[in-house]
Length: 86
Image 1 (tube, rainbow, N blue to C red):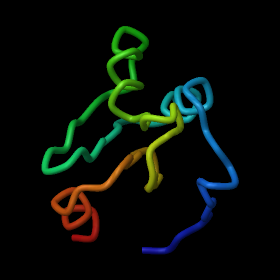
Image 2 (cartoon, rainbow, N blue to C red; image 1 turned 90 degrees about the vertical axis):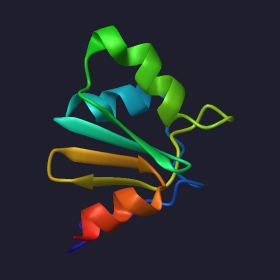
Image 3 (tube, rainbow, N blue to C red; image 1 turned 45 degrees about the vertical axis):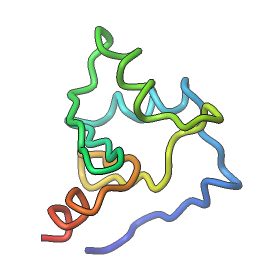
Image 4 (cartoon, one colour; image 1 turned 135 degrees about the vertical axis):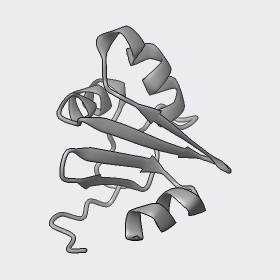
């Protein structure tokens, strides 16, 4: 897998509005939380729920966040990354 862009989340902070804008361009969104992975299709009806799980305590987009084509992966979960790496 090639990485086209790498952004340091400590220097380039993404808040709720920026995160939602990012999610709008995705076909699906996988959010890793502990041992669970939650799958979403970005939809304005579920915006509040999506932002609740994809933003950290500080209100910033959780790291790591990866875009693979039209799919976004937010947060970390072993199983999610094993599946991603194939």
